[in-house]
Image 1: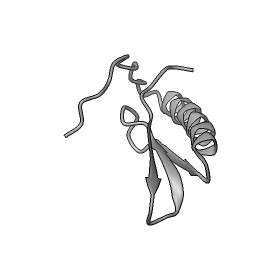
Image 2: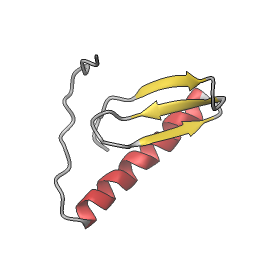
Image 3: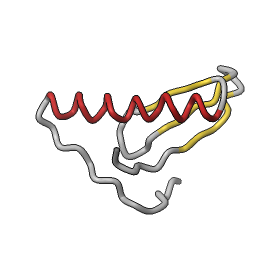
Length: 70
């Protein structure tokens, strides 16, 4: 599986850990623990990539460095 940056944080509103993959638009997952959120987001990344391939769209290459967010 490609090595995309994952941002993991606690959502007070939802009372879950949220994992986001900024390089893959809309690719997020959640879980009751850090571990479950990471496991779930790895599955989400694979589904995101599989779906993108099905539609014939390009899959972005991981940047391989820390993203700069504003």
